Structures are given as C-alpha cells and as structure tokens.
Amino acid sequence: MNAIEVIDVSKKFKVSGKEFYALKDVSLGIKKDEIFGLLGPNGSGKTTLINIIIGLLTADEGNVKLLGKDVGKFPDITEKVGLVSNDARFHWALNVKDVFTFFGMVHGLEKRERERRASELADFFGLEKILKRRVDGLSTGERMRLSFAKALMNKPSILLLDEPTLGLDPSISIKLRKEIKNINKEFGTPMLLTSHYMREVQQLADRVAFIYRGEIMDTRDVRGVDLEKYFLKMVRLGE
Ligand SMILES: Nc1ncnc2c1ncn2[C@@H]1O[C@H](COP(=O)(O)OP(=O)(O)OP(=O)(O)O)[C@@H](O)[C@H]1O
Ligand SMILES: [Mg+2]
Image 1 (spheres, rainbow, N blue to C red):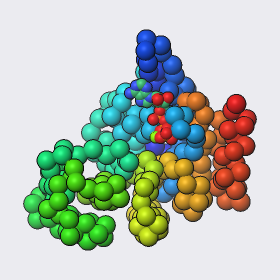
Image 2 (tube, rainbow, N blue to C red):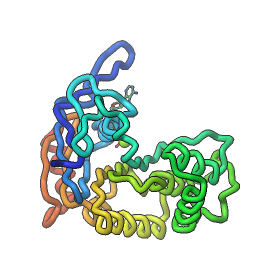
Image 3 (cartoon, rainbow, N blue to C red):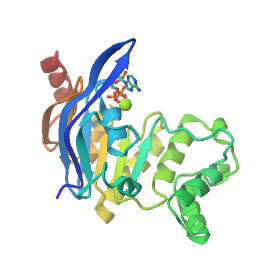
Image 4 (spheres, protein in one colour):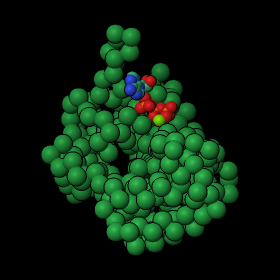
C-alpha cells in the first residue's frame, strides 16, 4: 500500500472567465518510507496538488488516498499530515507561542504535552528567543521555521514540504535538510517535497516526478541522475 495515492486527479481554475486545467489526470504513488520530489516549472501545479492532498482544495475529478483511506470519505485522515509551506499564514495578532498553542490544541494535545513539544521544537528551530514576537513582525526565515515547527507538533505520519527552504539562509537550510532526512530515517515518514533547488532534491529525494502544465511527464529514481540537466531536458520536451 502506498502512503500517498493520487488517482487521476484533475483540477480546473477559472481566470477572467476562462477555464484551464491546473492539474490534468495526475496519478502518483508515494511509498511508505520514501521522500518523493515533485519537480516542475513555476505554475505547473505542484502547490495545487499539495493543497488537494491535504484537503485545502477539492479535486474536480479523481481522488486521493492517505494511508489507504480516501480523503473524500475520511477527511479526518488529513490530521495525520503535516504541511510545511512557504505561504503559511498565521493570524497577525498571534505571537509565536500562540501559534504552537493553537496547533497543539487543533491536534488535541494536552497542555503539558503541548508545552513540552512547543519548547522542544522552539529550541530546535531557534525560535525560543522570539516566542513572544507577533507573527506579523517575523522575517521570512523566522516564519518559515515556525511553519516547519508547527507542522511537527503532532508527529505527523506524512509530511508535505512545499519549498521548505525557500528564503532561508544556508546555515538553517542545511540544518533543516538534515532534519528532514533524520525524520524520514528514524520514523520512516513518507514525504512529498517540492523545491526549485536541485541540490536539495538530489540530496533528499529517492524518486522524482516531473510535472509540466498540470500533467506528469515522467517519474524516475534520483540515483545517478543530474537533476539540473534533467529539469532542463524535461522543459525542452514539454515545450
Ligand atoms: N486559486 C486559484 N485561482 C486561479 N488560478 C490558480 C489558483 N491557484 C493556482 N492557480 C494557477 O494554477 C496554476 C498552478 O499553480 P501552482 O501554484 O499549483 O503552481 P506551482 O507549480 O506550485 O508553481 P511555483 O513553482 O511557482 O510554486 C498556475 O497557473 C496558477 O496561476
Ligand atoms: Mg508552488
């Protein structure tokens, strides 16, 4: 059984009265234990697919199964999924600690466990000195670190990483990549990763798929593939 199963998913958007396919008949299987990279140019549908997988958007056609359960029939299954996204938005009036409290409560953690987890994660992500800072005053990197930390509050069984190191300085990116690899190794957490940093995908992913204008063009093992060359080749083929 795949941890994430995307079956013939299509999604249309309407812009200025004109409909277009953001995703067209997308099928993907992400195995238990693997890190799967989703590559594709800007606007090719990566974030749309991630939002459908976690239930923030509904597909027009097709369905998604997480850990064998259909998201449409068992929406609670998405509680087992952590999302790290560069457009994570938090209510401006919350401070960093409030965000931890909020997500802890959403996941039904008791106060003591919530506080223990928040303190562990704040420590790891270097947020302990800014716990009282309001989120509307955070830098890009601080917001991204908070997004990562809150996604781990409930020890998710699946992680969706949408450009998780976008805008981060190299020292924190390196630390985060190590942590991504560690979580995957230690807990076997399956992950779907999008990134425009080919080195990052090369380092983390076991397999990749290439998506172009909403359609999956190719899926392959990463080992032995120069992903930068691969990306450019796939774009040429798609044009
Ligand atoms: N809510 C929406 N309404 C209309 N169009 C949308 C909406 N969300 C996304 N799109 C369009 O759907 C297409 C796919 O967008 P998506 O954000 O999934 O791309 P992406 O592959 O994540 O790109 P990037 O690499 O820039 O993050 C784009 O053309 C985008 O403009
Ligand atoms: Mg995106």
